[in-house]
Amino acid sequence: RYLSAHLAPPAFLLGWWGSVGLLPEDKVFIPAMTGLTLGLILDACYWRNWLRRGYNVKTPVMAALYVFYSVCILGFFMGVPVFNALPGVLVGIYAARKMVVSGQDRAVAQRSLRRAARFCVGVLAVCCVTSALLALTDPYTAANLESMLHLGLTVTRPMIYGLIVIGGGGLLLVQYGLVMLAGRWTLASSR
Image (cartoon, rainbow, N blue to C red; front, side, top):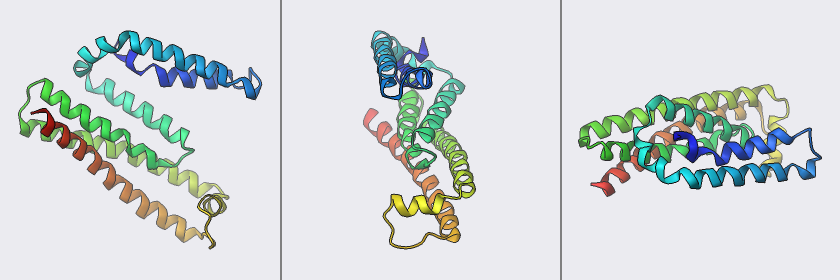
C-alpha cells in the first residue's frame, strides 16, 4: 500500500523493457504508455491513502526506493550521474516534513537532515564511481564527449580523469547542499 504512489514510473519501464524483443521497435511505445497509464490510475486511486501514511514508512523502505530510482535515473541518462542529484531535493523535503509531522524539535530535525544528506551523497558517490568506471573502460568516451559537447579540441585521458575527479567531487558537494537547502526551506516554511 505504501508503494502505490510510486507505481507509474516502474509500470512505464516494465511495459517498455518487457516488450523489447517481443514487439517491433516502433510498437514498443504502446505497452510503455499502457504501463504508465495503469500506474498513474493506481497512483490516483491510492494517493490520498499514501499521503496520510507516507511519513510512517520505515526509513529502510524509503532508502530502498531512493536507491531504486537512483539506478533508474543513472540508466536513463546513460551513465551520466548529473541528474542523480535532483532526487536529493525530494529527500530533503521529505525528511524535513517527516520531522514536522512527528513534532520533532529543530535540533533533531537538523540531525535528521544531515543524515539524509550524507545518505544521498553516499548513493551519488556510488553512481559517480560506476559512471567513472564506465567512462574509463569505454574506448569511445573521448570521442563521445567531443561530439556531444561540440568541442573544438581533442579530449585526452588526463582531461577525462580531471572531469571525473573535479566534476564528481563538485557534484557530491552540490548534492549535500541541495538536500540541506530543500530541508531547511521546508522546515522554515512549515513552522
